[in-house]
Amino acid sequence: MRVEPAVPADVTADVRAPLEASGAERADAPLLQPLNLLLDLAGEAMRARLFVVQSEGGAENCLRPDFTVAIARQHIASGRAAGAYWYEGAAFRASSGADRPEEFVQVGLEMFSPGGGSVEAADAEIAGLAWRAAGAGGRGDLSLWLGDVALFSAFVESLDLPEGLAARLKRVAGRPRLLWNELSRVGESDANGGGALAGLLAGLSETQAAVLLEEVWALAGVEPVGGRGPAEIAARLVRKAEAAKAPALSEGQADAVRAFMAIDDQPAYAFAKVRDLAGRNDAALKAALGGWEARLQELARVAPADATRFTPALGHAFDYYDGITFEVRSAGIGPERPVAVGGRYDGLLARLGGAGDARAVGCMVRPWRAWCDGEGAEGEA
Image 1 (tube, rainbow, N blue to C red):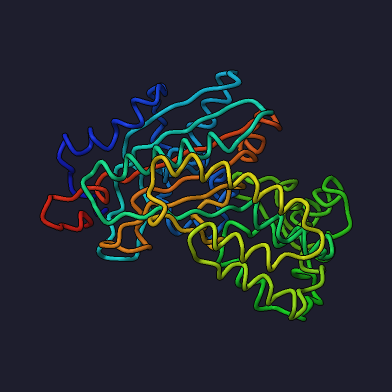
Image 2: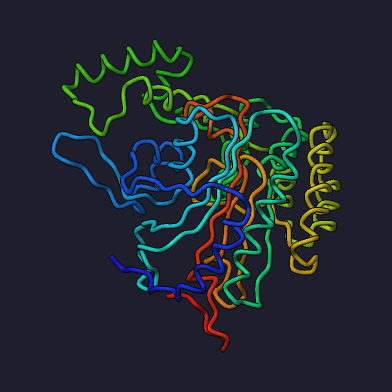
């Protein structure tokens, strides 16, 4: 395993300082995390980037790839409606790149609150903390990139698409690669409905689909492994089949989505382009853009306007983000290696067993990427 080089202690302390000063509590997370849960959140393709650990006959776990899910689970278990927690520790992700460390240090903060009230102030606060923490490492080449999964959902609503197609687009909003795959099937339909078995399960209730799947396993003599039960697998297959049977985008609709995703500009100009592309059903979109005015007013106190960009195509490895997303990037090490990332993930709390109206937003900073030795060192392994 390639380990990230150590960062001078004073540099790490400087990067950590804005998060500590926020008043958040110190938190930690178990080194081992449940594999199935993370795959549910990030998709099966994420397995190749995880270090899987399994004892004989036991459930599969993995070395923690990040802290967000673990901290969220701990917050839910505490029973508290609100809380803010900062953390610092090693995270682990497998990489095929010889120059990428697989064990690296993250410093971050997660903020949770009950439902109700405005989210814009909290979004701006967390993005501002990420900006200050990233800049504390000494770099002078940083820029703040903003995105918004919820804005994409509101844009999709404005186009008056069929319900199944709109839902499918919204599900991949935070994962640009999957969205581009969807755009590539313009005018197509999937006669198999996502596969023969998925097609058989489509239209059944999840309980009925699970019973049918168990019967298929019994006839084939299959013993399921990995901890996923028939209900969970059947539900996924049903969703896949129903999504595949939805009509594809028309060429005009696909062009509008492509143009939306291609936006990359200073926020004021970016949002003007969004308005120009919107369809007739734009009430939700107008409300979402109004929220951005409040965020930008707060962020302007922290990040220079000429260093701030907005691009809807901003997505992260985990697809639990459902609101604002952001990255702090360094010109010296490029967009593929952000110094800090974060965003809003309200829906994750309900998926983890928390209150359905609870809210959550957080950020993570890589001290090694934030570090600069004063002579233009890239600070990257």
